[in-house]
Image 1 (cartoon, helix red, strand yellow):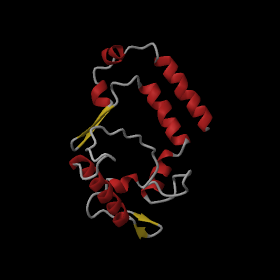
Image 2 (tube, rainbow, N blue to C red):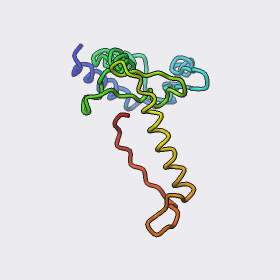
Image 3 (tube, one colour):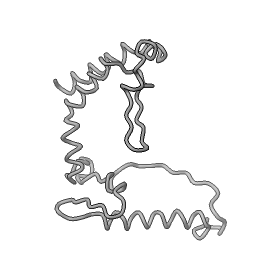
Image 4 (cartoon, rainbow, N blue to C red):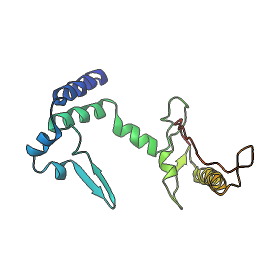
Length: 153
């Protein structure tokens, strides 16, 4: 299936379900929560409260296959340059790796650079909170506006 066809199928399923109320989906499927949620340790992923049914899930799975989601995910975990705009690895998992994690890009462990960056930004945040880093008038910051720009490590 082409990506375009897969998207068409997803859009058709969304249109089909648009007028359906979530309470009707639960009423028609008493095992909905059990089927459409999963738990891993203390993480609960629950999509039962989305306008999904078996047909819609089939369409979403077709889209995932059409865009080679599994292959791209594996490439990302392998440190391949999947961030096409920056032509480099997308190392989101390195930010969540924790102490002792090893994440390689081109055969080099990048965790020391990731940990150094984390320490710098956490130090900056602490300096703002404590007032060591202040406004131009010397007053502590009272509000912070954060606009994320995305990107990779």
